[in-house]
Amino acid sequence: MTQLTARELLVMLYETALDAVDGRYLVNQWLRDNQGSSLQRRPFTYCVAIGKAAAAMLQGALDSSPSIKSSLLICPPSKITRQLKKNKNINCLASSHPVPDEKSIQAGLVLIDFLSKLEASDELLFLISGGTSALVEVPIDSITLEQLQAINHYLLSSGKDIYQVNAWRQQFSTIKGGGLLNSIKQATVTQLLLSDVKQDKVEFIGSGLLVQSSSDPDNDDYLSSLLPAEKLDYKATEPGVDVTTHIIGNLKLAMQAVHQAAQAEGLASFLHEQFLEGDACSVANNLYKQLQAAEPGIHIWGGETTVCLPEKPGVGGRNQTLALAFAQHIVDQPGLHLLAAGTDGVDGNSNCAGAVVSMHTAEKARKMGFDMQAEIDKANAGLLLMATDDLVLGNNSNTNVMDIVIAYKTE
Image 1 (cartoon, rainbow, N blue to C red):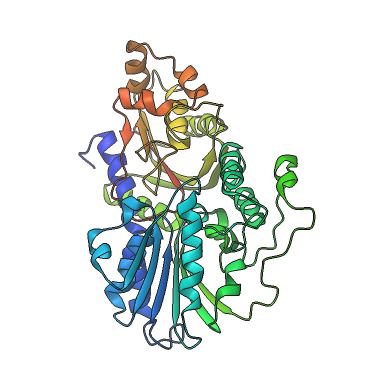
Image 2: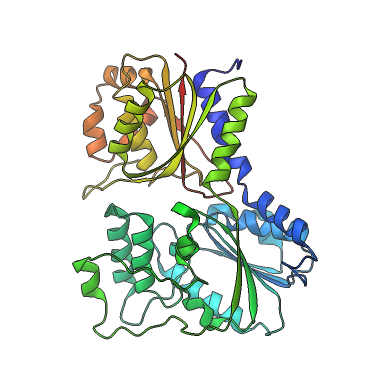
């Protein structure tokens, strides 16, 4: 039986999940397993890496593929290591997330220029993870940067799921939804993906730079009004590029790692297939009801909930909101603890991944004069959870496979 405290145990299990889907490890492993195989007949000579986990993924490629001559890396500035910066064969671009800005537009232009300089005979590898949608963009001609930012702010606060968010992003982009295929000369390219979408639908991972989407966005009068009356189709109708796609890491892999680690600690462990989505507070309520009737042990879920933000949101994100909403139910239940955290190490506009809550969360909040529900309504869960010392950091995350929720029921 584990000798860790409940909080220590849950944080350890969360970190185990991150290790299992580490971008550097998974890319390195895939390339080593497939060097010289039918999946990779010739060594890769050029690489494009985009996303929150792109820096780690690129390092994994360089670890195992010395044949790579030149690479383009587009990722958040905090993810670019000194080792990558010093490599003269890598063009490192620090870009913006979660809302695109002028750096995102510049990154899109640099990406197209990078591809234009390659020969048709070059072997090209793409490494894509979540976050790509904001980090790189070339909008349609009728959309200004200010409009693009307004669109993204609207999408991120709308409560729409990731499918609809990315389906709408594709409408305003010349490179998403397969549009980037128009800039590729190679007959075949390979892309390795870390999935941050439900059911690992490749057309929505990074808004599908190399995958033509067949999904239509939902009805939205505001967004529809921004599209030109006769919208040009920037997507390649016959791209002529054979894209070989491999999903090397996903939420299921992270959850399975937690399950095995819990068993190794001598605990009963339960993997729940239910995908957590929709309003974070409603999900918290449902999880509490499930745990009331559940057996003691570790319970594991995954997904990506949503929060409809007020006009002036406070500090926090969907995982902190979920955790705080759950804490309201367990004010007199010492046997329940819950961790909710993003595998990318970031939750909303905060600098942490999520939170671990227990009955002591509400007790400490009350003593400090907080109204828990009021802070939730203000989208300010992060401030309260910082005061109660319940936040979870994810500074060492090299991945992005959505969110994980781990509960520990001791009795």
